[in-house]
Length: 229
Image (cartoon, rainbow, N blue to C red; front, side, top):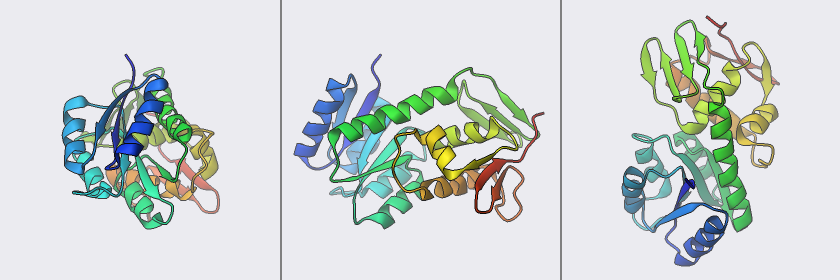
């Protein structure tokens, strides 16, 4: 079954070009021109990846992303103008997995889509549950339980947690996490790691000032603090 991609943009020309390149690469593509239509299609079509433009005519992309994260873990690549750095950081904080800046190369977009799907498969490979005191991570079902409660994570947050928990005590630099989770072809801002770590801690109920699960190694990066059960 080909992976499904939802392209959300109010400009028909952009949708047409992206759809052409993605279909040529073997993806099944659905299009939406408004935010409301995008939310509805994610519920009905269950895409694997959403390419979401920030500037939409009815509901802006950041609000669409907020709505999606109430019911879906789908990978979301935010499409922004280069001047919209604030939108990029806000989008990452809300739950975007990656971003692409306009103007972009359609080939770059196809590569980014392939990258997020590839890392998703890698995070689930082996399907061996990771057990720690008060925390269970199941790569096969992509489920996390903390203190006997199910934790909702975005697809990328889950991948990031698996990367850290797979090597307890190891210190990962931001660049190492980018290469392992985002892929070696990622060339964006390393601050995306900090934003997703912050989101991950919040979801797990981990206090950054007194961390129990994910620690910060100043000037270096992050490490997983729990010992295997």
